[in-house]
Length: 101
Length: 287
Image 1 (cartoon, each protein chain N blue to C red):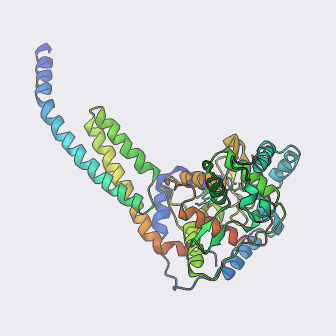
Image 2: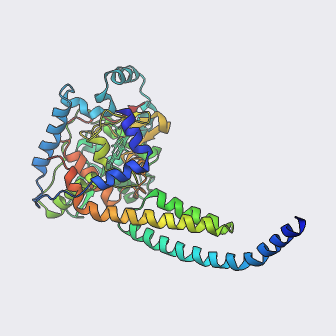
Image 3: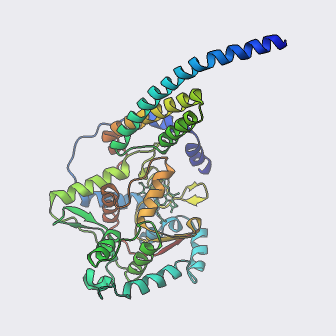
């Protein structure tokens, strides 16, 4: 029992650095994609508050070394940003359906 | 009714369904006709609320609910905006360092002119709101601009509205394609869905006036600017038109725009134009 726990810890320690490095790269890629989409949304004057918060959460998690959480938050931010872009594009015509006439 | 709005606001899935349902309906491109728009806009509210006197629409949520209206009328004996009004009057008559006053910047010394704002400035090709004109007046006289969302701006506009109470909104669209474009842009902004909730201004203020959202009763879009600026208990203070727009944007989880951005100026132009003929009632007080 004692031995296996020690082994497991050793194993974890030896694996951690490489797993960690990979996730940091994942995070950077996910964050860059999210940031690009959110900039596009902002350029269309259609940023959502939840996109901004998800981006901030991703950064916070990454700063704390939790790249798993950081990647998840960055992907959420990207999805939200894409939805806001879709909204802005479809509303270019769709707004007319709401008009009082 | 209440539960329905709460549900919509509370759940993302509902918002997504709304998103899916908002399929673009094809409407023939037609030309901008503000006169016809204003007529249709007013008729919509007059027919939807046949028991509300036309001039009462300018009282926001109070026009929608008799009990609220009674409480408000009692409160009007000691209105919570009184302090801001006094401060605004004082500020208005206090000279700038160069000896001039706000009165020097406005027609009729700034008294009884609220109903003409915003106006379209043909020289500049843009909409000029009262808040913007006040800050331009300050800057032209060597003073720093005030924040568009804070007390000083609310006090000044409160005083200017007060001297115009009862005057009928009278917004002009000059014969200038840029004026028409600004009006159309404001209209588009008003009806465009935004934010994660996928709501437009019209979702709340056209489709749901009188319904409750959290603790508040939604004001009708008709005459919605006539009472500005307003005192709100939730703000524990006064709020300008700019502040209200920013707050309404955030409620839908949309990042708000800068106060006095083109979109906000244009939507103010549109909403004021379609309220032509309704009296100025500001400053207002809200629960």
